[in-house]
Length: 172
Image (cartoon, rainbow, N blue to C red; front, top):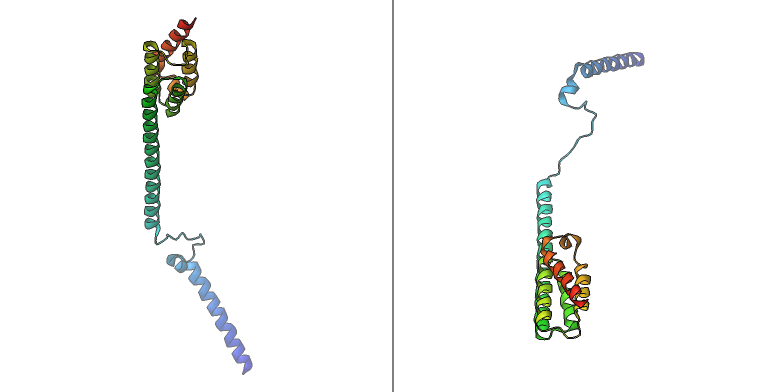
């Protein structure tokens, strides 16, 4: 009896093995999509929300940076204007140096040109206490060099360079 159970077990195992191989080779597994051995890519449920959040955070950061830059520019412009008013009341060597430093730090050729033009005009009309024409020319030239290279090569400063050269020539 035991022999009969063993034979039936072996025959049924062979039948199951043959039917499994026939089913696998027949393409049934491939139709179901289980035969794909490539790793599956799953999409996050919150992918769109995460991208929207990141773009919103970038926009907030960009806005904050722009706001700070605008505030810095406004603050520098206000400081330059306060210095210009103080200089116009008492144009002397120290105030002239401070005004030119602020104008050069502002980094714009038109601001520096206007400031330097105002200083030259005041120097020619009334003179500036403690400053000769040569010293003023050297002061303007040194602060002109503090401007960014792109601003120094702009056309805004052409007339200023000519005025500086005239001041240097007056001193000789």
